[in-house]
Image (tube, rainbow, N blue to C red; front, side, top):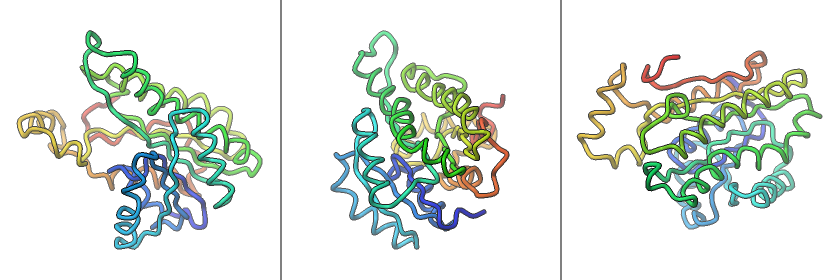
Length: 249
């Protein structure tokens, strides 16, 4: 696989899955820009050093992708500094889990804005450029819980389901112009978040996965690299599940 000399932007690129995606795309020859929230800027230097230590050169640009102004400003800054974006991975995401009975409007809005609306806010500013150049790869990171739902996650599941709706509709607009749009839907993945689970909760989750293990971030990154590849010209509007058989549809 190859993304040689392409400019790739990964929103939420400093997270567990985002980091693996950045590293893999850099290995495939892309020039990679990770985005982070302004509140995470104190972590940037250490994160960039960790990437260099792993033989991956990745730059970081801070911005708030959860607002129209923040998304537009972020992408304008990237294009002005680094050039046209060829590959966009919409990976930014948060959770605010609770039952419908207890969920506040603020918890709903925070997840919808960050996990779903952000995909529109950062894709639209670079969309015309992709269409005009006749090449683009947009890859949206959804979740198995966007396919099957999850107790206590009406906000998260709705946002992640919406991500694939966004993919399918936009795929029609890009299909004749050389721009592909696809979704990757991870299952439970080994990250700092899942590592912090209680042992009994973690064991119960693994017991429900046919492969009897959680996935690795690198396995998600492999799926993204396939969809981002120069040769992946005839795959668009697809939802690629990477969940160990947890949900088969």
